[in-house]
Image 1: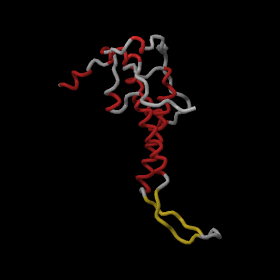
Image 2: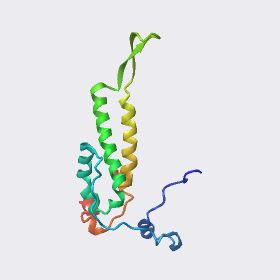
Image 3: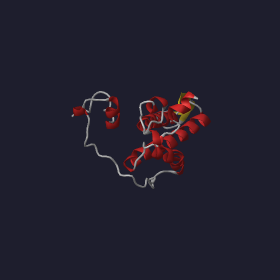
Length: 161
């Protein structure tokens, strides 16, 4: 079975704002109840710091709900792993010396090669981008979100001043 093709479907609230045809709007879409949003126990200290830095604001804007806890936790974890990998690359460099061994397992020299931490950095960066987009955490993704005026009092006025 193949995955879905094309862009992700527009959120229902966005379809209503855009004036889409009524038969294209899901009037039975489930909505999460308001409730406590608690960081999962498995988050590292660094990931928990990311959670605490953004969660209250995202909740206030209506972007983060209890149903989103796992996806948001994955974002926080990816940010922490990305920061760790970036620090390691900064310390060791993007190109490092790799040992070269002969068939007997004796060290015969060194060769220059890509730092393996770059792979971890790239993977974590992709996850940060993917999960961050779900919560409007990049300027282009944020431009596509619409929130109620009461949740964003400064809104466009802040940009125009």
